[in-house]
Image (cartoon, rainbow, N blue to C red):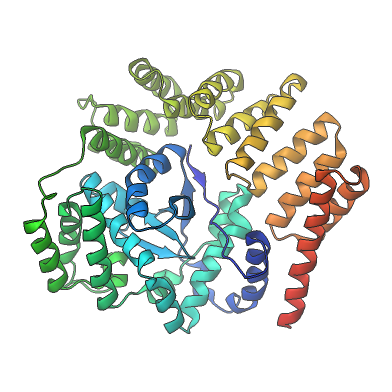
Length: 468
C-alpha cells in the first residue's frame, strides 16, 4: 500500500535521533518562515512495502560492496514525474517515481543507485553541504525535517503542506555536485557494478536519455541533469568501461526484469489516470505487470468489481505473493468491506511478517472493526510494526486509541505522548507523558518510557531557549 513517507531523522551529537530532529525543526522554523516560494512546489514522499523490497534487493549488494552497512542506508521514494535521484540527510537515497517509471530496465535503475552509492561512499554530500551557505540549504533541510515533524502523522494534506521545494531551486543548489565529484561517483559506480557482476550498460543508457537535454533551457531540463553535471568525458569513460569489462554482456535476470516491470506498473497505476494506464497497458496486454497496473487503475476509478477480479486472477497464479493480498485488502477496506479486507491483510501478514507497513494495515483494520475480541491482536500488530521500524506518530496514536478502548488508560496516555512528541506538539506530549507517569506503576519499563519522553521534551525546550 502506498503511504506517505517519514524521513529518517538527522542526528545531533548527544541526543536521540527523534529529539535531535525536533531540536533542528525548532531551530530552523524561524528561518523558513520568510521564504514564500517554499510552499509553491509540493513534493510527496511515499512508502510501499513491495516497491521498497524490490529496490532494496537491487541495492543491498551495492551497499555491501561499498563497505556500507545496508541497514543504515535508506531508500526513499519521491512522487515526482521528473527524472531525478539524490543523496541527502546522511545515508538517504531519494529516487523520484518518474525515474523509476522511465528507467528502461532494472540495469538502468541499478546503475543510478550505484552512482548515488558512490556519492555516499565518497562523502560528497558533506563536502557539498559545507560549501553551501544560502537559503537553498535551509529549504532542503526544512523539507527533510518537515517530513519528520508532519508526514509521520499519516496525513497527506499535512505532509504536502510541509514538503516543498521553492520550485526546486534550493534543492538543486544544495545538492549540486561538481564535475569532479560526478566523475568520482561514476568511477565508484563502475567498480561497484563490477564487484557485483553487473553491467554498466544501464547507467550509460540512462545518461544517454539525459544527454539530449543539454541544449534545453534550465526550466525544461530534468533535475538530475541540473544537480549532476553531465559531460562528454563522463559518458566516454563509462563507454570505455563497458568496452573492457567482462560483465558488460551480463544482463538482468528474468526475475529482476519481471520485478522491475511490476514496480513500474504499480507506480503508473497509482499515479496516472485510467485512460493513460490503458494506453500504456491495453487490455490486449496480458502480462502480469499490465494486469497489475489495470487492477490498480480500475480500483482508483473506482470499479471495484473489475479491480478485485483482476487481483483474484493474479492471486490464483501467485498464491504466495503477500503484496497481492495487501493490495486486495486495501481495495476492500477503502470500499467499506472491512471483514473481507481483514482476511486479505491477515494472509498478507502471514506471508510477509517482516513488513512493518503490512503489520500496520492489518492492525488498522482490526481496530476499525470495533470488535473487542480483536483489540489484543491490533495492539500486538501495532507493536510489531514499531519493532520493525514503523514507529510513526500515526502508529502510536492508533495504539493509544486501542489501549483506550481496552480500558488501559496508562498505556493509552503513553502511546499518545509518543505520538504528540513525534508531531512536535510538546505541550500535548508533556500532558500525556505526565498522565502516563501518574497512572503507570513505578519501576516498570512503561513508566521509565514516560520519564524518557519528559526528558526529551526538556531537551528540546532547552535547545529552543538557547537559540533565542
